[in-house]
Image (cartoon, rainbow, N blue to C red; front, side, top):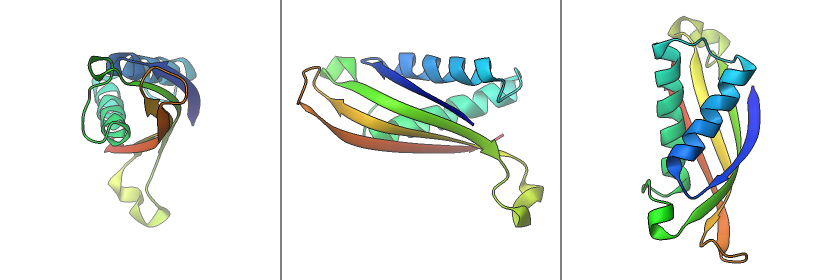
Length: 112
């Protein structure tokens, strides 16, 4: 498991921060399949945070998020399905002004 924090007005910076943390902790191999799976799980989680829009700075919205990334099998009964990757985001979103934000969460799950 990898945990961390990120705040930004740009979705690509959120993706980069999570990918960097996962790479630093060695949770995934540096293969296209693993990196691609992580990318899609992060984007899916951001869609949850942004309620379907991947727009932050352009709409004058900023986020402050805690993130967790986990890897494993779905259950012992489903071990033949291979491994899965989950990215959870929790924090706030709103105008870049204190007191103008609200809580949000997002979850992205992808097969490795």
